[in-house]
Amino acid sequence: MEMKGKVYVVLVMVLGIFSWSCVALEHEYGDALHKSLLYFEAQRSGRLPYNQRVTWRGHSGLTDGLEQGVDLVGGYYDAGDHVKFGLPMAFTVTMLSWSAIEFGQEMEAAGELQYALEAIKWGTDYFVKAHTEPNVLWAEVGDGDTDHYCWQRPEDMTTPRQAYKIDKNKPGSDLAGETAAAMAAASMVFRKTNPHYSHLLLNHAQDLFEFADKYRGSYDSSIEAVKSYYGSVSGYKDELLWAALWLHRATGQEEYLDYVVENAECFGGTGWAMMEFSWDVKYAGVQILAAKLLLEGNYAPRHERTLQQYKAKAEHYICACLGKNAGNNLERTRKGMLFVRQWNNMQHVTGAAFLLMTYSEYLAEADQELVCPDGPVQPDEVFKFAKSQTDYILGSNPMRTSYLVGYGQKFPKRVHHRAASIVSFKKSDGFIGCTQGYDDWFGRSKPNPNVLVGAIVGGPDRRDRFRDHRGNFMQTEACTYNTAPMVGVFAKLNSLLVPEQEMVPEQENDQQSSNPGSQSS
Image (cartoon, rainbow, N blue to C red):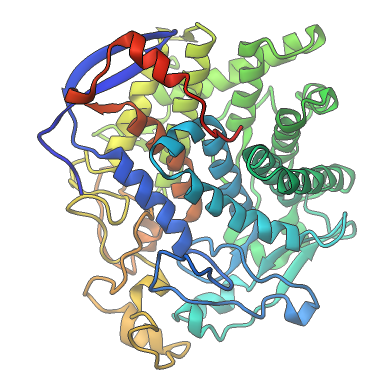
């Protein structure tokens, strides 16, 4: 529930100095963090574990890969259907892992780190299975056309479970690159708590990057079935840079940074000035990771000039989000939400919130400010804008609606989601056929019988309007990659909320912050 009327102290660390201010806050970020991690349990495919907390879900997809002679049981459904799309799933895991790397200590303090690790591992376990040979990666299970013809619970699924792969004859550098990035980032997360598993993931990541780079091509040219759903509009070059940077961060091996520098221009890394960050378009993330190296001084002299170019493009994105880019800015709604496009715009809001918050941390740690065309910006201003986007998601908007399902007093009740919209098989175990779900459940005006807690839906239009209707999939469908970036954001914001009576003097806070924790990094 939202907590209103309480006074909290917000601790904002800017340029190494803590500033204090007392403000009335509406949002309980710890509750948002808790709920966001529950969502990934609702999206699980495969045999569910004994400690499954989303109890209205059951086992599903238990024969995935059987026809092809490979075990593809597990992984995540991307949204409100039952296809397992490899590219958005890998991006989801990359963003969950990046959240844990940057804000793992904050997650642990909130008692949520273990659930974040489980969410990551549910994805990486699947990727280990799907990477059956050095140059083979299974890319998708099910196909969107036949899947969308039916409205069923995943436990009743009758649609074909055709599996599709990429290999050296049918390459997919974007998919292999993103999966390499996910596994490299995840290897960092598990380095302390599960070193053997971390090593396994890193080996897969290195093999996948080699596969992606050696046999170049876009995966949607090799797999026709994915084009209408997750076509790779940006191509594969951003994923190659993205994977190389994550491998450099995971291994410290200079060859990966050499790759990023040598291919900076021809791959668009220092050429593209981006206005979005998403499961398809990684350039802004690439540029921010490269800028981090420059801010930290973690590079060889020969890399400096190119890293400066990456940093300039990273700050173009940040300045455009802040509206300080000499008129070349991201669009905003009248009430301040970033707006990129009508269909599932919230994915761009959550991705931006994460990048903004993370970059504000990088700037503060380096004791630097952001230089925008419209003037210099302090790290705390970048942070505050990230927080404003978060608060909009949680209900500080004209609709007074939380777009995080299950949070607050008002949130979407008719999410476009097959499993949530049909009574749980645990309450009614009668089989529901392919089109029976459309007849009996899809068209109902009543709220979904199961609350898809933690899902972030597509969200409002450019006029801040939102219609809570199951058939309004552009606004009411939720996706794993909408919620994944916010796990870190919620954790960070929650760590900065301290009830007034619990506020400690600055020197004590410094002492507390140095206490050892099992932060995954």
